[in-house]
Image 1 (tube, helix red, strand yellow):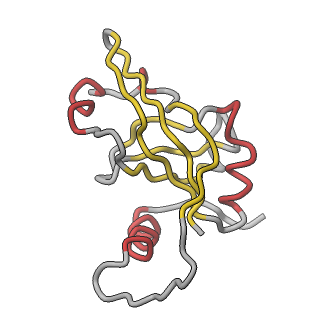
Image 2 (tube, rainbow, N blue to C red):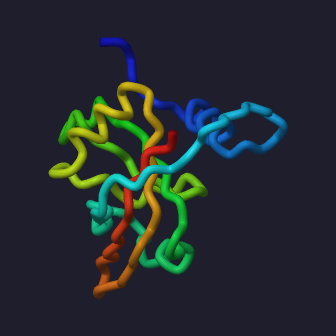
Length: 133
């Protein structure tokens, strides 16, 4: 299998293509977002400064997904980042097998924050997963 690592330049290219900004001019005639699944963001307790990030997360905000096939804990790992490229966690391991396969096949998946709640030092973030087609 080839190298599937995503670097910062790749992330910016994906964001640029998906944003439709800066005169890219890619016409996608039947473009739509398809709701796939409700879940939560896993691992928020391991994010340093999550209490400072929480006020900047808004209901309905788009979350970007990036594959981490070299993740030593889970080869199907999907990193979840804010629009400002701030890591907030992962798609839960119990939910990521099909989504990682879709992403590996070139499909664009993303999340949207549906709920959030600080519980002490733990931030619970519920999200909806979408396929952009």
